[in-house]
Length: 310
Image (cartoon, rainbow, N blue to C red):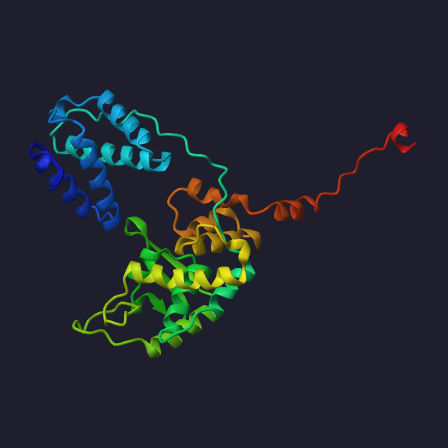
């Protein structure tokens, strides 16, 4: 428990075991532990039963003053609130000092970076190399099915039903969602499975994507594959230069394309696996062009006054 005052070690272990038992993702466990450790180190040995709302607010203010954005600050608050919730559940404290603290406001009008349809399609033609088919399927699943990097990594062979082209995706919070894939995408996935590398070591390895080392592909490798594609893409589309392109932007592009083609927000929410529809609402930016098309369907019948007619 590096960086943690020894007094809190038992409580932190309890917190970690709680998250493991509730199947929090490894990313969430790591992030929340980091946030809670940071907070505990700010208490200077104060007993947890004596921690109050002011202690939490002072810490969150310090986090912002050190340069963290509102999103990071809110995640820290969520981690501290869950930490004390666990301690209350196991009767280690009697109150949750983080419970009533309001979250920091996050700008809601920020338009997420996304690729236009022609740019998205171009990505597919830019993939080459020894593992071209595997890498194409990876990029396609993010671009045309909206999978997260972590979901790509966790995907298993048995998650694709070859008869129905239905893909079972294990997402955040250990929640499953089921995606009816476009026939073209399902076909290229089945084609890839015929060429899939054989796993080394574990014979029962069912990972859909196998690395060149014979193991389940890593998050870093998926990110590297997309980074290579984006590097080449920018040379063909100079207007993308300077934009923060990442694997997650392919998911943004998928959502944007769905809405542009008439999908409703609730359907997009389900396809993306968002628990809260407010998360999906960042995609309602779409574009002025889409709004203009919608408004062009309106045909007002308005009286023209004699004065304006002259």
